Image (cartoon, rainbow, N blue to C red; front, side, top):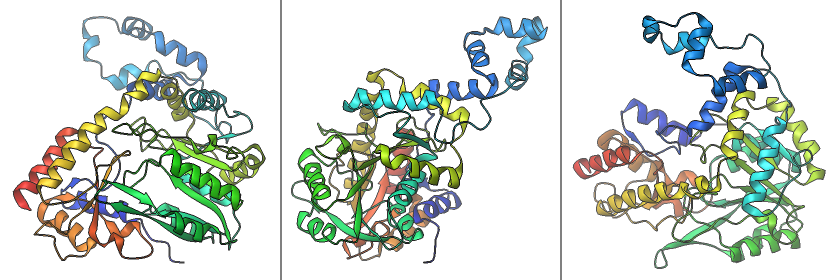
Length: 429
């Protein structure tokens, strides 16, 4: 197969080229969680556990005294000069650590999982820290499947689900979420699921909830059905749960591994990218059944060795925050969702309100300037003529023509950025 750059990344590059407001790729323009950032910085500069503790409590007076710089001119020091003087000459935390994750982070992941889902995975036997959820998906695939095996994927999908499968020689098979416009939601066709997963070549089912790009949150009925299909046809589930804390209007994320009979056949892929507003850190994890962990860790070790040691320290700080922090994440995104949804509807787009995640999958056929265009042409028109970047809807489908009416908008940007994008739509569309 020919491996291509993902269209989502391409649209971001085009947004930069055309100075467009970027609603295409799912990363924010707001600062990541400060405690997490400080923990990463402290690990880089502190170098050792003792050095980190020293930095955490050190005052400016102590820093200046230690450098012999106390005095009237101390306020003219640059931050770079100031921090250079407190860097530990001895170092452990910028070096190789355990390939499958520092113990502190694996224990934090275990405690965090137990706090939210009532299940505590074994940090030694079940948790592997990976280079973001993308690598988590790749090592899950390669540890479970052999070339020629098939994997069930819900479409519309994130591009990496089928493309990674094909890179490894697996065969993606597709089941389709369809919009129920009257009910304002998306529905899983259970007959189609049965037809696909009953194929003996299918060995795994990728389950993404909250869902990118539709915003669907699979409820307990849907997840119970998927669990039943996995048990009936002896399938593994690979769950992508990175939007777990971003749900709206009473919807809640459920943990498929906690359903009856699923603990031994579910690989949970997660990361700090969305929860910590830190998509560039690339810190994720996979929770796997104990008997699957050894092979998964071997694949991970041979692909990337490990995730960055100091950023793992930052992830510990994030996951150990109070529960109220995580429970408060969704509200900011709900306000952004409502702002973007209202603005798009005013411009003629039609969209069911997302139940979770931070994407709007919007039908553009009633927008006069875009009507009759292909999704790619509509997206290019918005970038070049309007100054707003989206992703063509057909990019999220492999079969059928259901994607031919959609564009994906990401509402993870700041309110100011969303307002700026909507202003361009009002003025130029």
